[in-house]
Image 1 (cartoon, protein in one colour):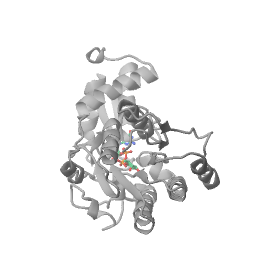
Image 2: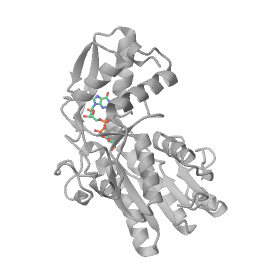
Image 3: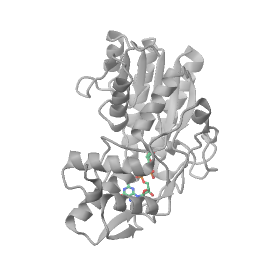
Length: 318
Ligand code: GFB
């Protein structure tokens, strides 16, 4: 990819978008274009068309989306399917109209069936029913990757779809009602330690397994795909191993220094039993994740405390 390319990062303030902006800066791309929601409402097709007509964009990184954890997805399916469909159709169609050559669309591992062989290969897509707690979001993301495939076929665009596993890292969402499990447990363990609580509540049974990729690795995989001239297709992006929610909670308590008990709340949903991605497609091209979970948890907790005040346990004093 040309170092002078004008690269539009849609959703640059979010966890994925801000990681992409950091990586592009680190790799010496000077022409990164961003717009706040107030400057450009991606839900407004006419405004998005005007933006692409006015700006000469060479590459689009479509990281803007309505995202959330299992409870947010299960309780707000209308919002999740509508907003994600509108954002992706507006941006992908406007990019095509403006002859933008390359685009990377970001989906999620929840696009795959609830029950399918593990690790999950890209070809298992649409082979059996989805996980009900997030099927609305999943359908929106499947539509987005299908948009890329269809435009590539009909219009010879070069739009690529990356499917990351569960992400974490800087600028994550720590609101306990809408966040994903890792940031939620980091915050809960931190507050439990500060408050001297006897226990920490973990949703569900603790038996589901999840894979966690640091968002800086996703940004690295995105640049890898662009710099290796990958022009189409669907690629899983993960670390290739998973752990149970109980093991994650135990690991987080150790990083945070909370020594109380884990209390499992069976009234909350478990969701998909497991969604370990097969990462061999990118591995065969030479890309692998570099940030292990222990290292990622420690750095993410440090950033959480710095951003949200509070104290660090001795083990994490800088
Ligand atoms: O991360 P999470 O919300 O989403 O939940 P999914 C993962 C597992 O962690 C579930 C459990 O089994 C939760 O019950 N869990 C335990 C918790 N304690 C907590 C907690 O305090 N908060 C949360 N949020 N979970 C999401 C999809 O599924 O995966 C999204 O809903 C997206 O659409 C994302 O695809 C990557 O991993 O189950």
